[in-house]
Length: 275
Length: 188
Image (cartoon, rainbow over all chains, first blue to last red):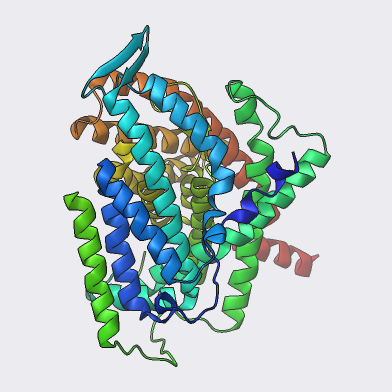
């Protein structure tokens, strides 16, 4: 029961873990470009072989970054029961929608098809890979580095009058607040449970009840988020924040190793698509 | 957005985008149901709230975050196509804002509720249209998903959007109102 209340704390997205590994020292511009490419390849990979390779490569990246594997996988724990339910529902009810390939078993509206089974296995593996990759990227890169890398990669768009800096600032804020709001959400959940709300005790098939149980969680979360936003606005205004004409103390210097690692990532992405 | 959008817009977009990511990653934003789509989503609600509070630019930016999150985190293959996952989501904020702006003068509460309803319907209709056009779903499956998922989603969206926006607007009076209150104080 207590497990249900600190689920959100396990989210590793948006946190930073200092270190001196290869992945930590990788120039953040090249790292961002490489991860974007590779994550894109994982997202589009539909085959078993590709996803097994993808899982192996993702685990190897976690190892390279010297992040304890248990820590990187922690983010999976809260999503696990949901994933299992979803997998079961997809397996039973989605077979007809993705009815390509052999039909193994059929009863009324329940179809067990090759396409349906592939969908469940591949999408579960892909979820694990994504979780690991996004966690590693944010665990080894500070949000400042990430924002500056994004800014320098998107700079060409500034010529088209796209507000690149504002956009990067927005992404930075969004990533920065994910762990904060996860903690806040746990607090709200405990507070509401103390007042008699029944989270986690409603069986999943009572859909309307489950939907209703979301309201006392989501609405206070929005209010808290908007309050935080007001504080941040005041802090930024009082420090004279401007979104243009900003300079930086550090400059990027790419070494050969940074570029080589990017090529390795392109190779890995190509491998996944090809498999 | 102008070339130098205000701090307020950047921060509100960032914070609500953060909620969209959180709802997507923890799967809290998806309520499992036994239909072809598998889940009813509430992740589009930050987009509508952002659009109503700060205009269509902010709504579109949060829509982009929502789209990318669903592209990366979704377990359903049809959302692995950027044309289905991202492009339709860019329009939620725009349409929700237009509805809100059109009805605001008549009644603020109705305007917020209508923005929540139509914004959610925009998401359902555009995503399913894109899915049919890209041959992921047949037309009849799309229509049944639209009815079984779209309507509950829209109802949930109306409740949450109204509760959040109405509650928040009461907490902080707009600058005009603040000025009015101040001037009344001075006069009084």
